[in-house]
Image (cartoon, rainbow, N blue to C red):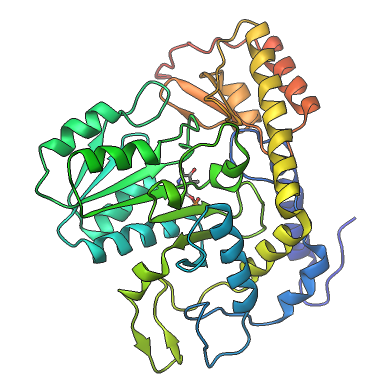
Length: 386
Ligand SMILES: *Cc1c(COP(=O)(O)O)cnc(C)c1O
């Protein structure tokens, strides 16, 4: 039944109705992207009637008052604590996603060390290369190991050749394809061993940062392990109707770059001027509703489903594997039919399923069933049709 609108024509109502069906269908069958779909923000929907804008630094006063800075500060505090930052020396803001958070981390690093070289692994997210290009910083790509983790020997050897230059290192906690984790303390130790005192480690924890604190044994990606800034995406593990992210850094680093802007009566410390004020509200609501225990439960559920998925794939003869504590199941690339139906991301010769908190055992069973019944050959060579 198409809802009747007072402002739109029947045709336009039909368009919206169709769009809704399309989005709903698409939402219900994806397993290949790190996006949670089980959020419910209906209790705070009424905030959509306000022109909320979190202009300026969330920790400073601003003359524009239709904002959610206070909740934004609480969100930053929550993650700073989760990432074991110094309670007296942290800062951050809610961004448009990890791509912006990474840009911010690299920007801070470059302002602190203008003559530095950036080292990043070949498995780093595509936003990293783009951000390095935008900031115009010299950079060197480092090999990654088979499991997707940075190759520490290649890193150390490359660093040795550039010992006279400050070093910015882009570590990834949960790479996009294999959810591999670069060890920040190992990276820090290599920098120490080579006596490169001017250094900065940014940790891109887009997906895994939201549950990294619950991994056993503890994985070193925190501030106390040597990270100067950490980024996460809010629409990934936590879930949000609008893409969002968080950057946490040290207040002392931010202080080095802040400028007072009289027009907004605040400090210009963020990348965008006008900033989304609804997303901090969603994140605040989610962390209040879940708490640390709720987040942990979400992770344990995901982990269980990932273990199940890996085992099931192995049972039907597919050599699936996972990095330790990871919710991403990696396997050889599958047929077009399966890839398209379940919206599986594929890179080179591998595909993956990411067992986000909304993924259930039943969905995995349906997926496995589809693979078993698929007659298409995954290795078929596509040919020109003429
Ligand atoms: C998703 C992802 C990003 C980009 O995050 P957006 O929020 O989509 O901008 C960066 N790094 C990693 C490792 C990611 O998985």
